[in-house]
Image 1 (tube, rainbow, N blue to C red):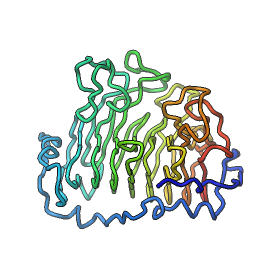
Image 2: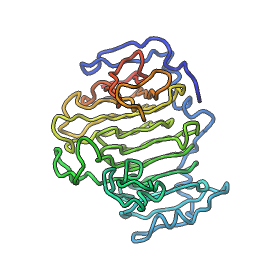
Image 3: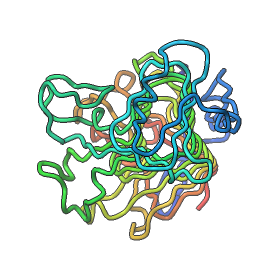
Image 4: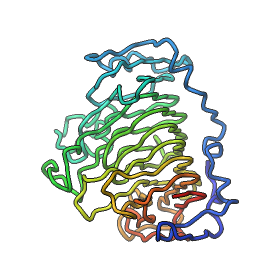
Length: 362
């Protein structure tokens, strides 16, 4: 949906947790609801789907990817894959498939873990694929996109009651024990889940990583990409929800993780990269933003604009990406500070940025 009016007009700027953060007026907040973002897509309840007889069942020691590969590329039938409790390691690719649901354990999303441990700075051969869905030929490192544990490059996908993780940086503490050539300045991006499609639903999932946990993106600049996450947990520390999709997170917990980074380096939650003529980006509603013990008050930026492809000092209004994110009707922990300068180093400015809040509470 291409609109230019959702952030028109003046913001109120209110002191929150001792910091100034812009607050949307009610008349503007009305344009930032789950129904407005999802448009004509009416997501169906997933309880019946989760209880349906599966087309395939994956057991410990078997391959989730093998089951995915059995799903045809076309058709109106929704295929259901049940995954039994266990840990399943390795990259997963859902690409150009018929409607598909991956269903874990209804009793405990932590019982089914889909995990890998690759990271952006990991070396690879020029002829080696970075990821089954994202080969990156000619490059000598995995790269951020290639680091993802799971990539969903398909429409009408449901992920239900399971965990998707990237544990590549789990051994790093207080900036020590990074892999060679990786550090605070780069290479530590390790994506758990990439969503590249429209009408994607996540229900009761756990997304675990550190930097760049969830990549919510469009296939192309004009491709629809409505993605809905409900009753879930998203955990990370830097830019751990990022991309240019229309993403709705509701009734969920967003957890900022502590202790990976060098002391003095704070965290950042949201990093949208919305096109300048698109009015909908990331919406977080009826959720909780919480931090692990040890994070100082105000040390985590609620977010920053990802000026994708823009070099420092070259951002141009109306041409460059200008990320949209609204956090509303949610619980904001004491660890949350103000919006931060963008990735191209333009200072946050309520008059030009499209990052705001509405009706949040401590």
